[in-house]
Length: 121
Image 1 (cartoon, helix red, strand yellow):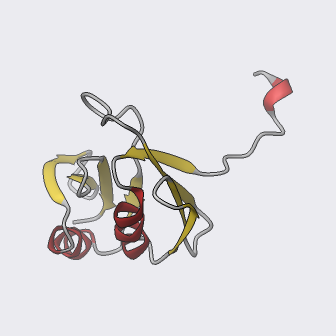
Image 2 (cartoon, rainbow, N blue to C red):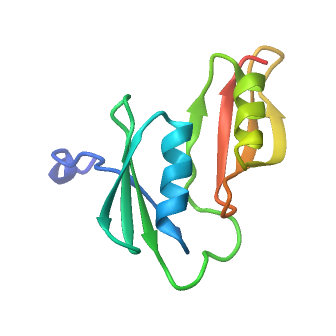
């Protein structure tokens, strides 16, 4: 273990996107958070009640291929939350199961960023 890094904390998870404000507002609705414009048209943050901070930064080109990072969201009502997310503009990408009791649904947000919703069916 590299002890020289033990004082670091995760400040936020940042997503590259083409239009930060609408995507941040979409995610604020998903995590019941509040969007704050830090730099108009360039960078928006979302603070969730659970303490997670998301950042959305404008980049000129979308990330090619599959995300290297993604969010795993835990749900107490997976199918209900998946339906709500799809109604809000997400797209279902796939489904996986580790067991009969636990699985996850892979979704994409309105800009194609992949995330998972896990929990009991």
